Amino acid sequence: MSVLSVRNLRVRYTAKGPEILKGIDFDLESDDFLAMIGPSGAGKSTLIRCVNRLVEPTDGQITLLGQDVRALNARDLRGLRRNVGMIFQEFNLINRMSVMDNVLSGRLGYTSNIRSLFRHFPKEDISQALDYLDRVGLSDHINKRADELSGGQRQRVGIARALMQQPKLLLLDEPTSALDPKISREVMALIMGIAKELGVPALCNIHDVQLAKEFCNRIIGLQDGVKKFDGDTATLRDSDLEEIYAMEVL
Ligand SMILES: Nc1ncnc2c1ncn2[C@@H]1O[C@H](COP(=O)(O)OP(=O)(O)OP(=O)(O)O)[C@@H](O)[C@H]1O
Image (cartoon, rainbow, N blue to C red; front, top):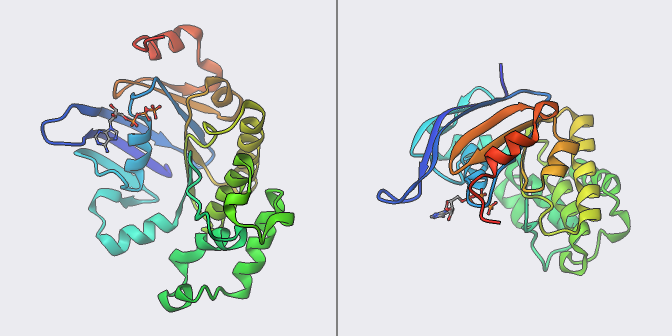
């Protein structure tokens, strides 16, 4: 069974507004690193955000880890979101908090309200956070405030925080677009290296086609809310890219 199955996904942000996703179908398997590419405004972010219902679809089916995502009540949706680690373009860290506390906040969905109020995390969580901080190369920075770090370091905190959830799926929403090309490559290598080690699949919205080709085994090309390509990275031809990006004003 696929980790994620999407059928006839349609989104309008307002009843009378344009249709942003126009009937998207795809499956994500347990060993997929799937890149979502396409011109600005194609609907990549919208699609990725429908998976954990940060955006509510207008129509269609989303089945994630065997659950009908659109049918979940608030409590079950919280449970499902714990299983989905999200890494954002703007990092979404809490600036005034330390690196360690930002990473531990990945456990909030698992910790009782009282414990989390006092930021009282079990020893195992602290030890796991230290391991992930080491893995992402931030052992020397654990007590710094998040806003004292560089962009690449901040995204490494975002990666460690997502891993603390012990996710079964990673959603990456333009994880490198705030970073320079060298750091972008390092960050992608880190995310995909760890995801592979842990056996966690990823769905990655990315505008850099070179990075998508380098790090993802499968590519979906979106254009104006329509899927124009879906296949192994090795089968993506220049003519496919021309079709996907045909409407982009250069
Ligand atoms: N909250 C919203 N309300 C109304 N329209 C929205 C909202 N979010 C996105 N849109 C519109 O939906 C369309 C698709 O946006 P989306 O961010 O999904 O595209 P994208 O492919 O991720 O683009 P980019 O690469 O520029 O981030 C755009 O026309 C955008 O203006």
